[in-house]
Length: 98
Image 1 (cartoon, one colour):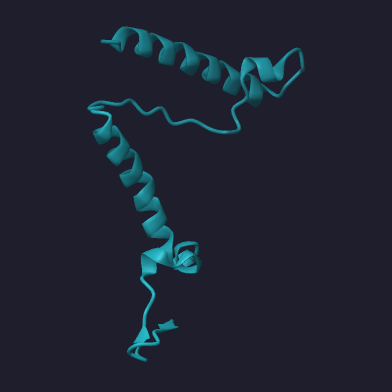
Image 2 (tube, helix red, strand yellow):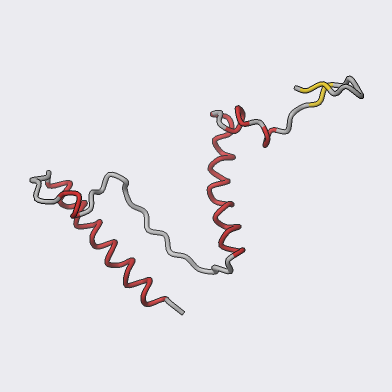
């Protein structure tokens, strides 16, 4: 809390300016909501009306990351999905260009 010299009254800091609060467990929902609203505002600014979201895993290795290594069956399968997603993304991008 801050005290002003003029009024000597206690003023409460706005929650959205309090980084300790914003980074706290209590403000988790605010952070999640901002991860939705911020890109939405950017899309609106750029007049982007439609998007496609592909969910995946940060643990899925690309085929290049596996290289010649003998990976587990799980990693080999994930690499196949990674490559299929990359192919689909390229097709969607090329097919949807205006």
